[in-house]
Amino acid sequence: MKARKLLMIPGPIEFEPQVMQSMATPTPGHTAPNFVETFGRALEMMKEVCLCPSGQPFIVAGTGTLAMDMAASNIVESGDNALVVSTGYFGERYAELLKRYGANVDILKAPLGDVVPIEEVEGQLKKKNYKLMTFTHVDTSTAVLNDAKSFGELGQKYDVLTILDGVCSVAGEEIRQEEWGIDVVLTASQKAIGVPPGLALLVASQKAMKAFDNRKTPVANYYCDWNNWLPIMRAYENRKPAYFGTPPVNLIIALEASLKNILNEGIENRFNRHLKLGRAFRSAIKALGLNMIPVNENVSANTLSAPYYPEGVTGGELVGQISKAGIIVAGGLLSDIKSKYFRVGHMGSVNRSDLLATIGAIESGLKDCKYKFESGVGLKVIQDCLNE
Ligand code: PMP
Image 1 (cartoon, rainbow, N blue to C red):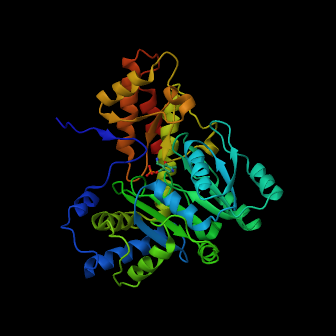
Image 2 (cartoon, helix red, strand yellow):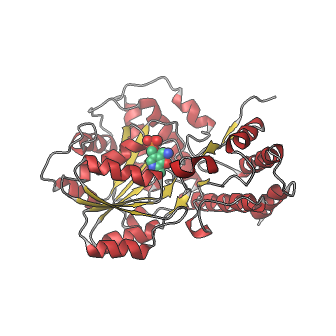
Image 3 (cartoon, rainbow, N blue to C red):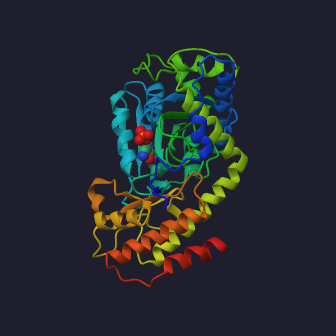
């Protein structure tokens, strides 16, 4: 019997075997011609995945938080006004991070499970001049999805730089960075991009790069400073080696492999697959009688779901029983309600059988926790949705 369980948490996700195999390539030097080609291709493909042909990509060793730090530290100067639109844990993190660089931060907080209405965001931009605005495309703590297109439009209308935290959305949810006028899209490797943790990834618009060029003060973070990284990214895109900090060579080889997979599937197909699987998963969870944190379908992410435990079921027990049935899901993250809900990631190369197995394991776990429901209803609904 296979001992391995299926990892269905919202990152790290299950990675494709060929991506894992590419990690095991004997490490080339960072100036080796083959690696220079790999790095150059990975940079080009990041622009394709974000649909931002004129963007400036950055690939550096670090996590998603470093990508947030890099965007903030290169754009913000002490005394700048920044607006954070928060839909949960990661919005709060961005507000704290921006303050470290001396930004005057205003935060608009969404009610639990909902977004801040776009009219409210616009009202705030009318009231005060901001240099930048951040929002979390998919907040991994709440599974709430923001309408990225509207944020891009507002940013352009009010001449405010928009930073999209796409750690839980890039290569899963629809993002058209250039068309929508979003200035920085940032992400990390371990989620829908499909590469083990360790890469901070960004694509910056020409407008963001101009704001960086016009800085009057040095970037307060040495490692993140684009003055250090820009020549490196430009060199590799031009198929020349360069050095600032040793690149995580094997992770970048894996990134090239995964980005190739993503573009072979086709970015539009990938958006549609996530949408279809996400909807089907939510329908099955609801059919089992569980409520979701997102208040409606319009604000529900397709890369993960966050259901509340049903009454009478304790979280630790259910998550444990689901794991016994072979599927690993994650507990809650938002501190006020941490013990009341769980999270299931369904992004990257996730497929129909992964979701069937997950719903099956959740049904089996619910049964073990003595929760009353119509046995098999989740499996029936998800199959009906997937067959539509
Ligand atoms: N933003 C979001 C939306 C995330 O989901 C995460 C990670 N879960 C982060 C930022 C931070 O990324 P990392 O853990 O890689 O630092």
